[in-house]
Length: 413
Image 1: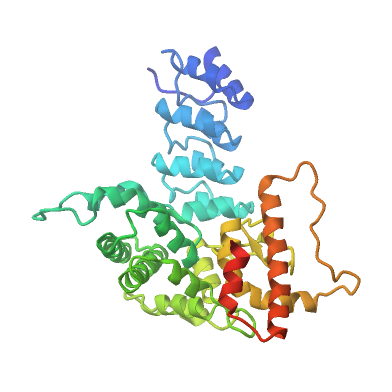
Image 2: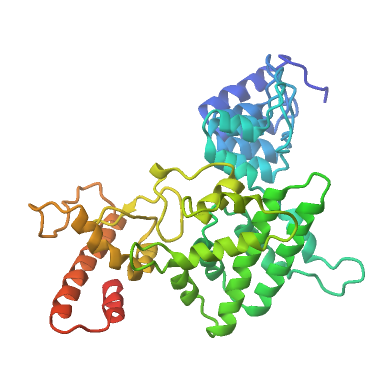
């Protein structure tokens, strides 16, 4: 088929562009099956169908075009934009990830020397910036699933590549979140498996530092994940295969203000152990911001925003479940709220008293509207039980006291 020239479109190719706007994947699929339709045709501005689909946020259409051989790195547009740049401008993280998985080059620049991540940052699409900056292809990891040279067995068992890649690709660096990802994959909750995984992470860290275009940011991330995996390994060896105690240690708050001292020290120690160069992150570490926020800013390329509502347990962004007692902490799920309650309950009452309204001293459920979902009802029920637990603690304390751990367990049953 002849090479496509700008604006040299057949009637069917013009129809493809219209179908992208309409989001009609089924009809577009039929048209793309025809021999006279070029998947990389150019409109009068030099934009391909994939660029149009990426800019309009049509994920299904992007997937269809890629399946038909769309050039993911085409940049014939006058200003040198690529499909990845358009995905970043549209703010669609799913399309951004899809294009990266398909081989999109994240270091290509447009006519003014800006990469896709820089273009996304310019228009405030910070989630896309994070996805681009943290991308690591599965193929690079799968290299270690095959014996190399004189090796008789691979350094990483193939069955571990998928779960480990999921951890590498996470943009949430909270150690609790990473431990939870380990716990979600039974194949990783094994001493031998974790040992293989952290050793591969160390090799990837070294590779990122010693490659020609050194990527210190990615190297720090690989090193950090290795440290978390090693901590998981140590707890598996000490705690008979259970990681729950590690999660509790990471969440346990200081009695005076609930500050997670163990977690803070752990992250700082991880950064200090970075072996290949002077860790500039250390120069930023004071008491405020926390080591976690500094690490997140350095690796994702953006600051943590106070109004983004991060989960108090795992650090997940967009947590919309708030403790209805103190209104001071957010959670992404009921599971995370339960995990955090053992330490949050110590501060919850104090926060309530600081923000107390003298006319509202009797706790009660909020009135649920018809559109409220089941998760909201469950969260409200859990919060109500927490309030009952707090009152029970006061009554028991007045009567002579009893083990607080028993009360903590009863509040999450």
